[in-house]
Length: 360
Image 1 (cartoon, rainbow, N blue to C red):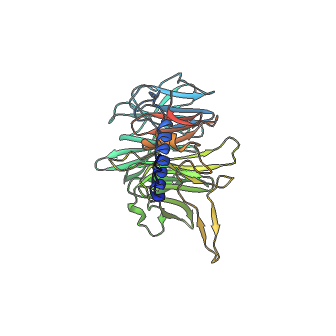
Image 2 (image 1 turned 120 degrees about the vertical axis):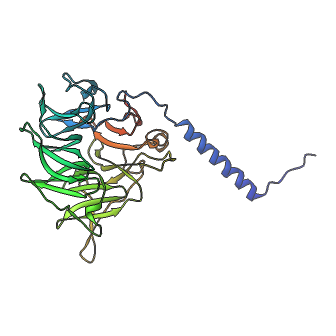
Image 3 (image 1 turned 180 degrees about the horizontal axis):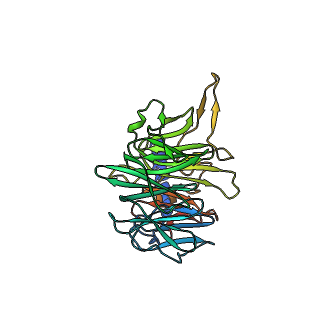
C-alpha cells in the first residue's frame, strides 16, 4: 500500500509562489535584448532637426550624419575639424568644431559652411527659433554669445555667468538655461540681468541641466526638480525624486492620440537603473492642469516609468534589459516617428520594432 504524503497548505503555497517567481525571472531573461554596435558611437552631440532632416555626430569625430527617408548618410559637406556640438535654428544648421580651446562655430545653409567670428574659448552651442547661442569659458566663469541667422559674428550677450545648458523660445522670449545662474531671458537684442524667479527657490543659484518648450509652457530641469512656467513672470518647481540628466524630448504615437514629455535620468555611480521617465500630456501637447476648488491650479508633473498605459514602449522587460541600463542625455523623434535617444557613452539609440537598441 502506497502511503499518501500530505503537504501542508502553507508549504504548497510557498512552492507555487516560488515557481511563479522563477517563471517570471525566466520570462524576463527570455526578453533580454542582445546589444549591437552603434552607428554613432561614444557620446553623441545634440540630436537636432532642420526641416525633415535629423542631424547628429559622435563627439570628437569629423563627420556629421543626416537621417532622411528612413536612412542615415554622411552630410555632403563637413565643417572641418572635430565635431564638438550641433545646434539648429528654424533655418540653419550650426556646428561647433575644431580642437577644444580653439573651436569655432560654423553655419550651414544647405549649400556651404560659413565660419562665424567670435572671441573666447567656445565650449557649447544651442539654438532656438532664429538665434544661435554659445557658451565661452572666461577665466573661472563663462560668457554667453549670440548671433541671428543672418549675422556673421557672435556678439557678447552676458559675461561672468555660468555655463550655458540650453535655449528655448516662447512668445517672443528666449529662455537660456545656465548651470548655476538659473534661467535667463533674452528679448529684442537684450538680456535680463537677473534670472527668472522660481517660486520657493533661490533662482540665481539653481543649476539647470536642460530646457524645452512644451506647447505654451517652458519646462526645465535641475538635478532634482522640474521647473515650468512662466506664470506671472515666475517658474514653479516640483520635486522629481530622481536625478535628471538634462535630456528632454517630446514624443507622440502614430496617430498623435498620445503625447508625452520625456526626461532623461541617471542613477547612482554603482546603479544600472537609468533610462528615462515620461509625463503624459494633453491631446494638444500641453501640460495637464487641473483647476482646484479654491481657484488655484495643479499641473501634472507625475513621472511615469516607461511601459504604462500611455507610453513610448510596449515591453517593460525589453526596456529594462536595454536602454534602462544607460543614462539618457537627449531625445528627438524624427518625422517618420522613429524615436532617437543619446546616451552618455554608448552611442545613439533608436526605438524600432518595439525594441530599444543602439542605432545601426
